[in-house]
Image (cartoon, rainbow, N blue to C red):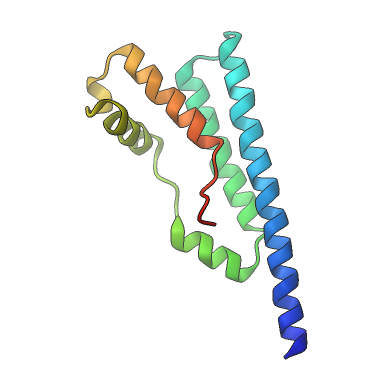
Length: 126
């Protein structure tokens, strides 16, 4: 019984470290995309797509390092990531109460920025 409890404690500590590394990495990706965007290396759509892809890659990487219990919790909250089109639609409706396709170019860029910002935030319930 003591051995099982010790294993659970070690897994929780490892999960916390893994989570901290994940958060640092997604923040780094988002920040780097914002820099690239500000100096004109990429446009807002490219930055949003890059952040989306990198966050999903990082999520898969760190889920492979998470304990069984931690992975079960993470998958219960988000088993698979939404598509980028779904994210664009979600933020368009949240920010402008309108479909992404019906937004002006400037409004679409606002949606892209929202996705870039969100890609650097973790789900605080985990």
